[in-house]
Amino acid sequence: MKRTHYSKDITPDMNGSTVVINGWAHEIRDFGGLSFLIVRDREGLVQVTMPKKKVAKEIIDTVKGLSRESVVSVKGEVKAMEKAPNGYEVIPTAVEILARSEAPLPLDPTGKVPADLDTRLDSRFMDLRSPEVTAVFYVRAYMIRGIREYLSSQGCLEISTPKIVATATEGGTELFPISYFEREAFLNQSPQLYKQMMMAGGMDRVYEIGPIFRAEEHATRKHLNEATSIDVELSFATHEDAMQLLENTVAYAYAYVKERCRPQLKALNLDLQVPGTPFKRLSYREAIEIARQDPECAGLEYGDDLSTQAEHVVGQAIGEHYFIVDWPANIRAFYSQPCDDDPSICKAFDLMHPRMELASGAQREHRYERLVKKMVEKNLDPESFKFYLDSFRYGMPPHAGWGMGAERLLQTMLNLNNIREAVLFPRDRVRLTP
Image 1 (cartoon, rainbow, N blue to C red):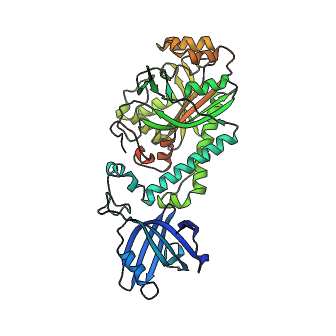
Image 2: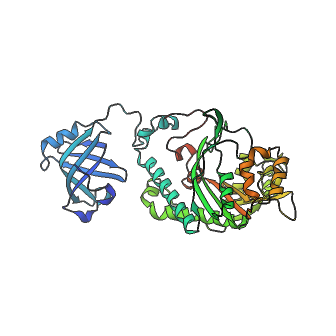
């Protein structure tokens, strides 16, 4: 039977209409003279009601013989019923079993029997049948859609850059090597160098949403080895221009999700608040001073990177999205442009949620000689970056940009405990399957 409606498309106003729904046997209840089959599809649940006096015996027997999570197709009549979920029920005229499920199940998708995260990820196909888990990825899809919509409306062109590269984005060893015919290559850490080259190509404003790979041996609730990065680069722009676009992008994504994902937010029991703009600006020096008030961070000195604990301390003090600006130039990437009045400070920024860092960006050094000098100071070999540096020799405009982790944005938006909950099939230090 061909599906005519998803669960969300059926309303009490359709009383008397015939519908066909396809999905999984979420629950089966038998009260003697009255049986119920709860069918679940991507959009929600449908109550199929089977009064013994109104529904054929073979249909009732078929349903009673079902195992939970079997795949079914149900044809029936919509009946407005105030007490039923969603205000209606379906009285079946035909039930077809499309695939039977084995028992016992690897986990309970209703959530009544809790499972730890590793168990859920081992059987992710079953975990995704939980309405709450489905809601997370529904929201993710709309969050990404909203970001694409907003960046496109701001004149940014979507690009795709290589994920197999010959050298590291910023040097270092946090790379996954791969065999590339007769040579060694690497999975890219970031589209940074390529999106800057697009500025030399005259593309003016670009964005990319794609995978990045980092061989970091972290095992935390906020790190992944394969993640999705939302990257932007803007010509004839300053770091202030980039920060403004970034904060507006985040606020737009929140508003987009709040408007279009109401059932999913309800399933997650979330009252999503759209952050107000502009976000607070906090200097790196101020952040260090706030963090040092915590005994665990008392030894933090100017020039140190902010630890996870320091981020938590500052985040709790600020209590909302904020930027950390005016970073020491010696702890930022070689392409971050120093301030003209104080070269020890650079025009870099991090976007922070009270829980963690979400994005990092800067105004870039667009002057060839200064860029090469900075690379040498960072012990990088300019010859290894020739393909990148050549684009600065023939007219590179001033430019700025940022990269934001999609999973971190989703994790903080939905208040997820672990970043792996924001990925369909996470890749971390120990997990390579499924």
